[in-house]
Length: 144
Length: 431
Image (cartoon, rainbow over all chains, first blue to last red; front, side):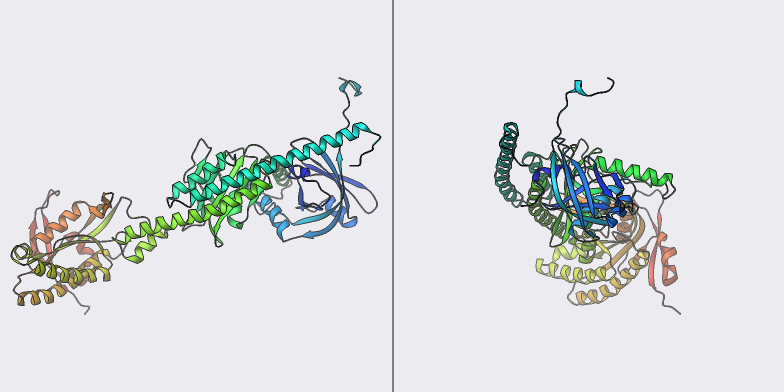
């Protein structure tokens, strides 16, 4: 029995973009939108590495990350705490992610330009279903 | 989530959540057992026919009625080219028949190329994301403007696709794809179900296709050499049974004195002579790669440059005719000894003809129609024993190795002016 519940799967299809927060060695946080957090197994997720960016650099300096995923069906959200395990450039997880990226890239004339460099595998340390407290509209401050 | 016993609202929430999970499990279980049953039914249906269209229809109907996939299609890998062609669709206004997908193009093309299943539920979001990445790259000059993208069959605004390669022993037969305008329309269970149906469909489609090919091969072998028939089946040559127009060299031959001989001889004698004559002439037709159009008793019509184009069609026709005449002299002397007065006459003409399958279901012939066939028949009819009469149109191609003599003017049905006939005296041997 892994840490990720089955009901989280729809949130990991990339319908609603996810967000990832990482930190540099000196502790400077960085938040970034990512197109998809891939479900690997009940204890692991994968992030796609297409470009070398701040997220990628931070992970190399500090292997911890937090991601936020949303189900497009129920709009339920989950907070995940992750720890970097390895970067795959082949194998079944890489293949599944790479095929999808290649298919989409071919449809927008970006075949060969937009491609998966690696599938970054993370272990899920903690998962929390973010049960948002509903605030009545009248109590929300600000102009209307 | 931990439950605080002092917090009844948290407890209620936990119970409600558990109940939801139980309901979901029950729904999944009911769906599974129901679907497994129906899948067994589908498999017995698709294995009960060898008709390709019927197999495709059963599979797509099941996608819709049993699995609830309203938009589905089957693409088959072309036998000659590395492309997938739409063979059947269900749930589309446009049937999309014949549309093709290159390997590696879109979800279906990538599935065909990699021979791995793909489930994707965020096509719209992914495409918007990629287009924005593209725009940024273009703005910074990293890439040029978007090249043309292939129009793919299916829904223009599909959000979800589930595509399965249809393989038989690692050989790609085609791709089965379902799609939806709803994001995340397919889940892991759908993958499992599609895989079960797909595996059976692949085998059934492959069997039906093989059967179709064997049938077509049998049909083609009646008219063409086995090698050519196989070439046609494998897609290396256009199906010649489709009507087409082409310039051909037509050879007509028959035996002078055959009608009188047939009237007076015993059936066994008659058939014996015919068999001997057909066997000898048939051997030469094969050797010179002519297409035998038909036998009518002692008459035979052969043409060249179709179905396979031959740059030296006229030369082949003439050389075959000369070889036939030489062989016929030997046959005739044997026949003369038995008291049969039979001699070969040949006519050759060149011109355009309409060629294709002529006949009706159950009795098809590969035939050529045109003035050129009339002219060749007419020249043959006029030929005296041992003569090979050719029309002047052939001359430019064959005169360098032929010695000919004029043999008079012929009136031919369908031609306004009489045609000069030339008799082949002999082949000119290189000096």
